[in-house]
Image: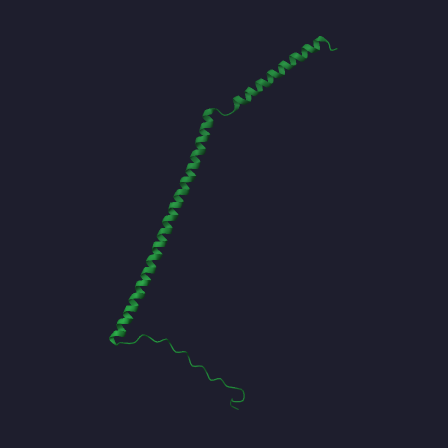
Amino acid sequence: MPPVNQIKQKTIMKKVITLVAVAGMFTFVACGPSAEQKAAKEKATADSIAAVEATKMAEAKAKAAADSTAAYATAEAEKAKAAEAAAAAAEEAAKAAKGGKKAAKPAAKPAEAPKVKAGQGRG
């Protein structure tokens, strides 16, 4: 059986260790961020997300405007080509109706050299 002195010493050591552990837990909790710091961090995160979304929206609007402008320019160019073709066709029809020059005929194929069979050559 252990002496009484050792039993008291173990009881005292248990109390001291428990007290130190509890004090350590309070120290860790106290060293964490405060509610104000947590709120500030959440606000900063929300602000950065909002900034990224705003940038994406601005880029999307710019791209849409550029695409719209390009499509309009293409449509205008096609309209101009169609108008030129219609004007050229009307001009050709007017010349043909007046008895002027007829529409240009396609260019004739160049004459091919006659093929010479073996034994028909000079010599």
